Length: 288
Image (cartoon, rainbow, N blue to C red; front, top):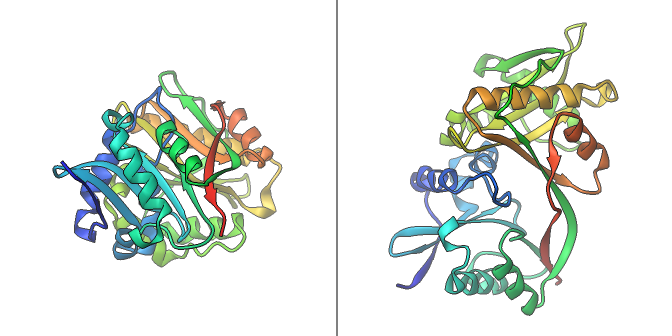
């Protein structure tokens, strides 16, 4: 059967999220997670649908791509299709040729780091390896210790606290209360939680959003940040430990996160919270 490239409508995003959930397994490379889709949902369902691409055969989704920005495509492939040569060729062609409607002309990046077949074809098509990223994983089969700070699970009435910490943690962040509510309205957020950590004076100092893919599957931290005025006091470690504990309560088998390898402070924070680094991964980029 022919492989079909689609841009699903908002009414099919639940199906896409469901496929991503099913594809999450321990012991396999970290790939696009339903939480990545859920975090993008802060821009609304229609914008999220416009950023999603699916590749299907005989009505069955084999691969999902998320345009995490207009020039970066992040991929996930069904476990049973990872050695599918026809799919790999189609993916490589679709991301390389702008007229296919996946990536525009000029500089562009593809995260296919977990799929050697796709990577090899991209290299043959003139793509180059970009800067390394470090994925990290924490096993959740053992108890998680108390983080040592007060943690609040944020609901709709406290969304303003979560968004304020986000904006104070990331330069140029546009995470508003409206966008929190849009994110929380998305289907992936049914299995997600927003957490805020407080210092001894009751100041909100760090925040994280965690995304479960269902019991027995890896959960994701995306994003985690520490307020710029409260760094260097261990709050990053504390909120990360709290995130692991909440994912464990949600039934996740492990917790995963990914950060640029050049961000040595973030790597150190995650390691201090019990996360173990996995082999580095790299996007591939096409020059203009």
